[in-house]
Length: 198
Image 1 (cartoon, rainbow, N blue to C red):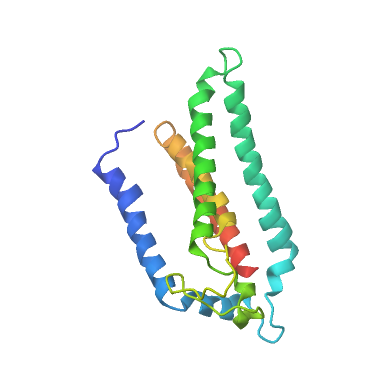
Image 2: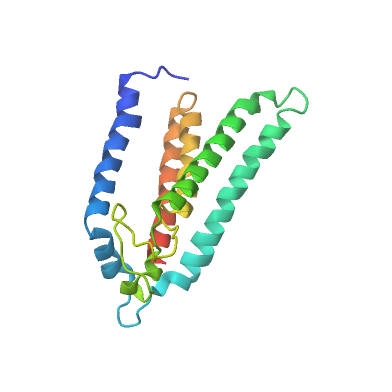
């Protein structure tokens, strides 16, 4: 593991956190996300999201993507189990435990946040053919509305959980770590786009 110097904390902790805060504040206090949905994803004439049941969004990226990430997590769990059999695979133990734990924590954290945020899915909103009014993330949600669990996107987080490979490889194989990071961010972006389109 390389020394975790000040530059590391700025580039891997402080800067991403500040970007997150700015983007989250922007999304929570404006209607920019609704404008993006209206412009790019929602068909006002049909009162529907055309990609909601499209094969590429539903089958390929939503179901298929979720299954691939689950297989990766299962692979790390199997590697962890194999590390306890004999001595030849003992060196797999820490990396596999790290990857599995990181992936489970990332997905579980987002799953827990979904229960706390109480945000409706777009297709449940009156604006998009549903029955519920739009309520900003930090606004007082009317008690009469049923509980909602659509934000943050758990599916996107499963793609983002793959960023653990970057941190695993960072100290040993920097070039491979950069490829892993780019791949994880690409998958996360594809999952996010598909969910927004749906």
